[in-house]
Amino acid sequence: MSKYWSAITRKLTPYVPGEQPKLTKLVKLNTNENPYPPSPRAVAAMRDELGADGANLRLYPDPNADRLKAAVAHSFAAHGITPTHVFVGNGSDEVLAHAFQGLLKHEHPILFPDITYSFYPVYCGLYGVDYNQVALDDRFELVAEDYLPPRAPQCGGIIFPNPNAPTGRVLALGDVEKIVAGNADTVVVVDEAYIDFGGESAIALVNRYPNLLVVHTLSKSRSLAGLRVGYAVGHPDLIDGLERVKNSFNSYPLDRLAIAGAVAAMEDQAHFDSTRKAVMKSRDMLVADMAKLGFDTLPSAANFIFARHPQHDAGTLAAALRERSIIVRHFKLPRIDQYLRITIGTDEQCMSLLAALREIL
Image 1 (cartoon, rainbow, N blue to C red):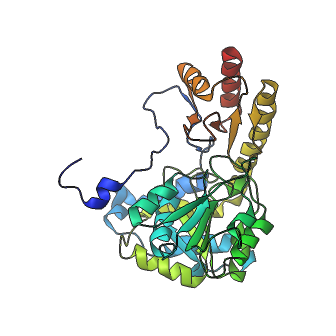
Image 2: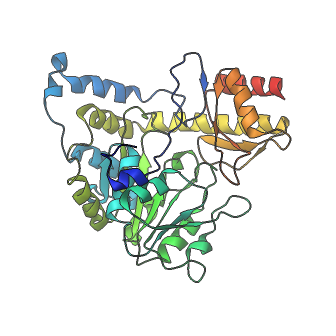
Image 3: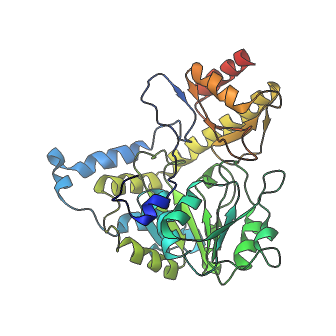
């Protein structure tokens, strides 16, 4: 610690992202990246955006990213979404950060699951947001009634991922609606980073509930983790609040290439459908093959699985896989320390994982 740090800096416990190894020839199944390349149209759009000799990079991007907001709105036009319902940011993490500061910081604590995206308590520490954690049930499922009176205490907001991370379990849209409808006086944020791999998006509910904010990312199903683009869809009043925070922090969160690539990716529905379906097919095959090896795997609606072997320690398995140049995510946390979170790779990568597990077991 430095004597020059502020008091809040001293108190922070930062988020620890998944490892990004510098080694080559790894089977990298630890950070939920998409195994397939992004839309060729997105790559071409970014090249075009450069201009001759990269001349366009001397110009600031559109601070409002209006083209991207229009592209997102068009994707959900069937639900009555317009650009006024859309907020965009530098990855969904930035969008979530603005939501914590601008929409979830109130007198009462917010609620989120005890097993969930580990950035949530970090945001609370950074912005001084009190929180209470709500335990998932014995099957690691989120129970909607636990977020409703009389079970739930008065709260200043609710946030949860759907599908949940790192468990991969999905909450039915009807149960999401119960939570939103039952907390009309507070904001409910549904973090849908993985919804495109299974489940029904709560964006369908946005025009019925002014307290609902739904957050998406282009990092997973659009294969653009390296571009850092996320967005939120909600009532225009919520979006206006996020814009006020964003324009008090960074007026240009998305660069010119990110906007161009994201727009093209949102417009290429065929590529989006083909790659996400390929991931889902590989996921189902991997779950079946791991069951033959004795693994118990939670039902997953994400691009990863959460699995344990009743007779083998998860940490030992993760270390043994690493020795064979395969890396997965192991969380040393209560209730889940015997589970491995395994990203769905290509079929070839999944076969390498299975071969290594057979050898280890």
